[in-house]
Image 1 (cartoon, rainbow, N blue to C red):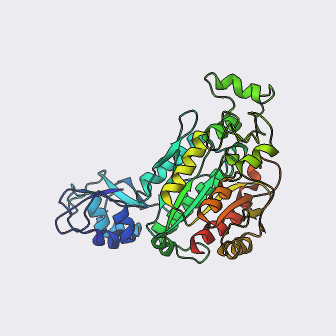
Image 2: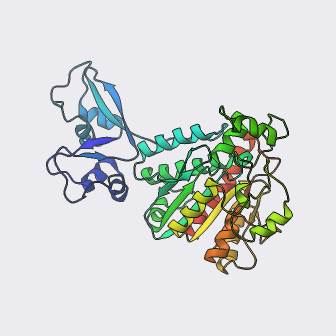
Image 3: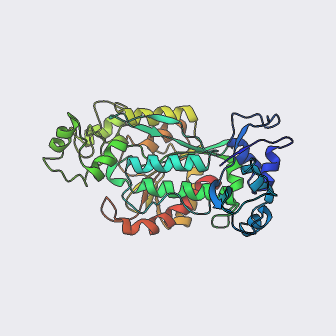
Length: 396
């Protein structure tokens, strides 16, 4: 919601009027010098939208504010062109409304356009988040990164490396929405203050690493050649893509990282297809390149890659993980009920490469249990299990 600066206004004053943290208002207006507001300047107030209200006989701004649990000055700010002493029956005014509900509806088939629409809505209501691009997919889809917070500890979550594990995206997006709601409503999540973690951590989220693959699983082949025909051929002539993990070129993006990649290639002597093809070389695919470049640029303290399924958390690689990884994964296991597993005979994954090159904690979290793609009937249970991990990733 936008307001326009009056003589004598300050961002601190707005934080009191709307009961929103001052830092959230500052971060929602990065183009503004907080101490030098200009009359008429637009200021974004996070966590609010404005709605129309039709004046009824006997209405006053004070009475409307009381009924809506608002400060009278909140109404004055968004209706600077009206005379509060001369309200007319039938006159339409703006009324600030605080968002107290989720904008993201995660329990649905969640393709790329659904995610992008939700991110756009979140950015409008919560302008303190940032949405830079991590890169682009094979088909040119932008791979968005979401940044929340301004702390020194840099934490990264990602989902949908594998196409038929797309349920990880709405799980992550639901947490993101809940985090933003908690910040603007000053509500704890499981007894934890989110304002504290906003100040301590910079959370980086890539909700959908593999947008082309997710859309293939959910919506079928793309409309244009050559990929329309090639994916059907790579899928053995079938148009059922529920078993497809790879990107649109048939490369498994979580086998693309230079962490004993050659061993993974020996184990999987296959060509392009629905799963397990490591590519012609490490980091041959634009989605993997985007994730590698993002990780180098951000210098994360820890990374969590969310996959399905198995209700396990992998946390080691070649004994190169730091000692703190075990302490962190034990907490992840405690809050989720998932089983920590140090390592398996698998190489070239994103968390493997992170552990190898940074010697910092990296985790692959396998959400839920069953056959991919997991059914939406599991969504609520998966989210409740994952929520503890999302939170512990910030406070550990």
